[in-house]
Image 1 (tube, rainbow, N blue to C red):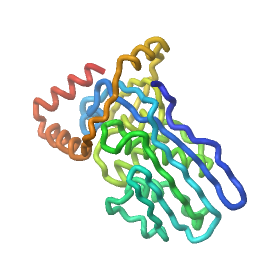
Image 2 (image 1 turned 90 degrees about the vertical axis):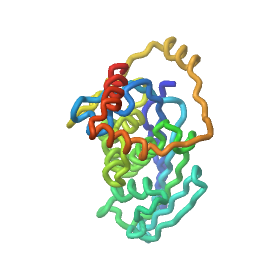
Image 3 (image 1 turned 45 degrees about the vertical axis):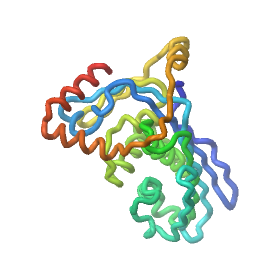
Length: 256
């Protein structure tokens, strides 16, 4: 129940291809959810208690030497395989936008501009089940690119890059807890302020973690939700200072 944060496997390199595999854990939130969403943390400070679980999002990146600079994406979750012949084709149109955004933000522009990329994606949980799957996918993609680019980003930097991809590049509403949970892994108490995020890993005794895992049951009801719409309503009600919303956020923060 306490898997580590994102993991990038050693790349398999040859003269013709580089292969990188990465995975990042999904999360469950115990308290404080929603207090990481702007503008609440900037005004009142947010706090979240969450942990990652032994269900993952996987990303494989294959790169070939300079050819045509194309990008192909295969998503097992959407049963979709698409090829984008040139960078200009990576436009946001509702089809695999998160992957396109990751490539647009992270792909080298100068040192290896013509290298062709193939990305294979899969999640252990359906999209829209409230486990942070899209943000976790962003973390897995950042992890794969980190290895591909031979970077040494910290978990904080990985989380912020994933945040920039999903929230800033794509404009998807939401907070930061999902990215930070996937990047750090384990049990964490997170604090969100105007200009910084503080992650405090919790040292939970193995017997307590095992007992908690034994007593928790995660079920898939067959229904999905659109978190963007839910968060938009929360932001609108908070901006209007609706007492019920402000009080509810304060209460869930206190529980954390």
